[in-house]
Amino acid sequence: MHQPASTPAPAPRPTAKFLSSKLVRRVDDTHDLARFWFESADFPNFKPGQYCTIGVEGVERAYSISSAPHERPLIELFVELVPEGELTPKIWKLKIGDAVTLRPSAKGLFTLDAKFKKHLLVGTVTGAVPYVSFLRDYLHKGASGDKFYLLDGASYYDEFTYDKEAHKLTVKIPGDVLIEAEGNITIKGARIDLNPDD
Ligand SMILES: Cc1cc2nc3c(=O)[nH]c(=O)nc-3n(C[C@H](O)[C@H](O)[C@H](O)COP(=O)(O)OP(=O)(O)OC[C@H]3O[C@@H](n4cnc5c(N)ncnc54)[C@H](O)[C@@H]3O)c2cc1C
Image (cartoon, rainbow, N blue to C red; front, side, top):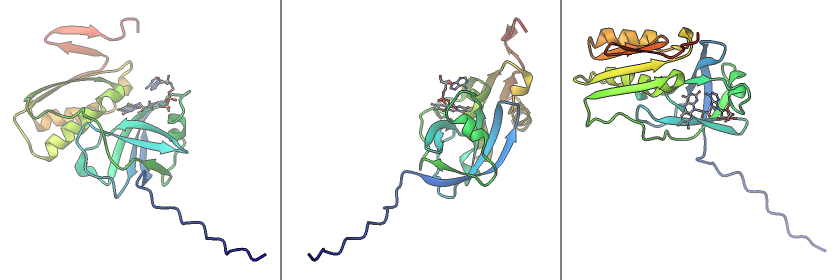
């Protein structure tokens, strides 16, 4: 019997689900904290404080972006290794040039509210990431008139990855950015020891 010619399988349709992105730089700050710079020509504009979603071998997680929008096509992330985690051990194995998936837009509502002029920013370790983006963006735009009070906490001094940069910012906007860090927080003379047993 004459069989009808089989229809060739359709080519996979281009998907808007992921952008291509590759690791272009990494700095290991401690044994379990590292900064990663991913390059993606197509990553659209975002608001400082938003997060992106990256994936390796099909495992995806959200990461706040520490770079500011003007630094695109680079996206800087500050990641803590969770040894038993699914994704972070895979991220730790990445080498320069390795590809990751990147969702095609940043998300999140944790952004700077222009209604307010005084901003109290509180975080620990990777929790300071959105604030780094706020401050880089603020300086890049040459904005002025706001006051930023950044309270950053960590268990160990070497976890203050962005403190040198933050201190530089205090020089650029004298009096406008207050950094109190390094294992204790001082607020108007009150000192809170984060590690009383250390
Ligand atoms: C909006 C958003 C922004 C985020 N931004 C950052 C960021 O800037 N930097 C960053 O490192 N992470 C960030 N995270 C967390 C990140 O998405 C992952 O959850 C984290 O990296 C762990 O992923 P994993 O697959 O290795 O571990 P999983 O397999 O998802 O988790 C394994 C276990 O570890 C726990 N766990 C998750 N994170 C930690 C941690 N830091 N310490 C100890 N235990 C943990 C989980 O609750 C779970 O019980 C963010 C999450 C969200 C929702």
